[in-house]
Image (cartoon, rainbow, N blue to C red; front, side, top):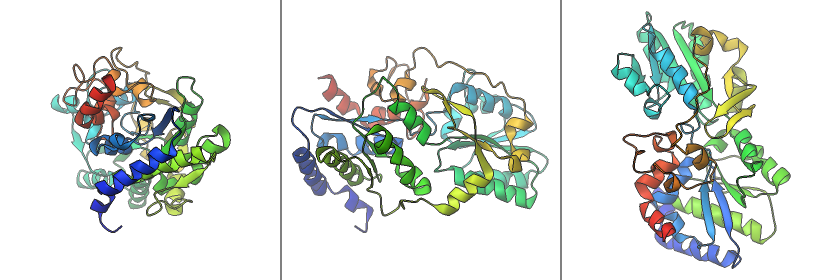
Length: 371
């Protein structure tokens, strides 16, 4: 295939659907988790779930970087953003994520200098242009986006820029998957692995899933035919009584990952002893912080932050959604009190959030499930 529309060919999709139907065992219910929120949006935007047999259920996992940020970390960001000497920079989604005392967008409306950027390099450019202000970049994301933050910090240090700081909330993908697999709330048959993260870390880190837990995993691309083929590969492993890591996304993902990206991550970051995840609680060795060589750029060390754990609103069930325990429409406030315009939880905010995917694309699917 050469063009993107070829990965959305309906005839090929129907052919894959027939292969999936021929693979599944009648009477058996299959539950496969797509780890990445990008896959969830593909599934509901293009109706991938309509092409699956009724006994094949896709559930969403904790692979949305915005969704997993707990409210306490948002409160820390708002506390830094309100400081008069600070220009606070972040990605657009994070401006609308609610903390216990509002959002960064509301803090901006009240006078804080909060600016949306498209990359950490934009934040560094602002620091060069405003040497009399202190510029803080709110870094979020899995191993996908962490290398860009690391390279920006390396450049800031090399150029001797002293008014640029990073509030680091980068997380890693393997510990939450292990936590899910050890959870009594969820029984899974296999995984659709995260394609973006795997461009950096490769497929090798996921070998613990078949080795320790006996579940197949297939690293998948993000087009509709990618996801369908990956589902077929998982089901074929189950039918053949195999259990291994397979890589459907070979056009992008090398099995060993990106060695240069992994080098810069190792230089700039180190693992935190523990980090809090929305819905999953504290998970050991799952978050990144700046290494000792870059501590002078660490906003957590430069500014006092509340550092308080804040419970989610009682009405919000983002935690259960992130763990795949419930579908978004099963949340009591989905589509009523909680909408993309007025979100209560992070899953309705992010462009990769499961609730946003269901709200924008999944209404017909919800009607079918209810019936």
